[in-house]
Length: 350
Length: 289
Image 1 (cartoon, each protein chain N blue to C red):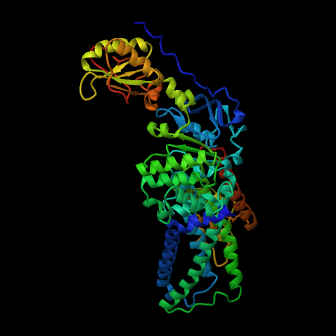
Image 2 (image 1 turned 45 degrees about the vertical axis):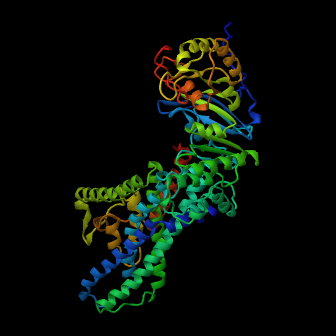
Image 3 (image 1 turned 180 degrees about the horizontal axis):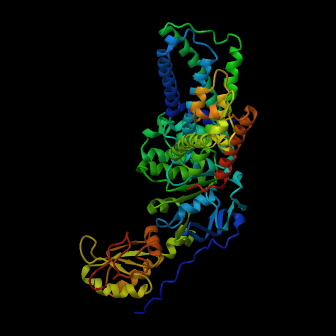
């Protein structure tokens, strides 16, 4: 039996080098700090036009700061922002007429109704036909409560209204900061469908920052992962998943020790996780691309080990934590395993 | 224009707008009832003297309310985070703030008209309750006096509102704007009283001439923002003592020469314009988090 070569990273399309004129939004070397507290340390972000861009990062990594800079709420200390192919500066406010945004929490006058809030908001910025208010309220399923005061709304309803406000002027670019916060499952599905329609049918661009990685995984075409004020990974989601691929395989508990040796040889540079007890006993998570699942199965069978389960084990959450979280570069013996895979085996692999 | 309409809608729907107006009207009603207790010495309720009392509410107490209301109107945009929405939509910060200021000016004009109308009705009610006849408010120079009261008092009201407005922009908070605005308002009144007392003490010999008091001044502190407005209110037709007390003390009218009306009015306008300019410049420079 020969050892397979270490898993080579799958091809990955870097966006940072792309010409900014072809992008809906681009930042280059963006620096921002709050007093002595750095927030962004040279952000190079590239959002292609017509996609849903998932902007991911741990708390305090700089996501909201980046969105605030793009909407003229903050001034960068250094670096540049390009909107729709041309440079954007703090005083270039009319460029924002093509941008809709929901930054941080949805903010409204509590004593006004949802409709009235959108009405007063439509008076600011780009000229907006008031008939558009009913349409966006309908989009987000808030027509029934449009006449109620916002102070009577739940968080999810405020969130829906926030999304409606962002879409009010039919923008070409939507910047949504944690839009799924407080949404019920129905609301999430509706938001997903709306944003899909927004990009797919209308050809517009959406940047969505979220902690709900599963949600982003279902929605995003391209992702950017930010940590400590710098973009650490960016590219099409499919390629990212492929490059950081995982396969889950199940063997009998008796075969686990031998299987672990074989699997480790398949991906010597990637962590290997296994479970040796409980309902999940016998499951391994192997750091190889799903395309190599057949190769993995063959290697096991050649050693007389027959897999009882084989499935793709890679998701955005595991990639995200591997890149940013405390489990970065952990091995199977490490204290923190990937959240989606089984916990690390404390036995023979330790 | 659409921004101003939006601001008026916000103000109309806001409870604070009506609460402050009702409180001012109730206080004025109570005052007229109390004034009525002393009416056994009066044979006639006359205008423009009554205008001066109404003016005290419209522009004196109204000025204090205007500080609070303006701070609430502007500061709320920070407190509720809605300024973020407006700026992120590409609206001009200066345009937005000026639209707010214009809407506030419209609201204060309407409020002053309501207070004057209600005040005239209250004068008649007081006369009715205490069985004292009321002279026609339009008798002689009545209408002109009413107009003078409105035209001279209104800029003072605006200037005082601009104080709360600008403090709220600088502090980015409605509560802080209102509290600091009131503190400045009351603080200046106390300061000018103290300074007036000191001036009198230092110049006591010079103040008494052969024919009685010989006022000195105007002193520099009569040009401070609240005092200069008080100086204008003192000139309202119908007697100045009531408005003078509201403006910071009665002593200064006895011993200090008033700032000439034209100069005082110009001072009010300068303060008003400066307040708005400071507000606009501050908002243009502010980062919104």
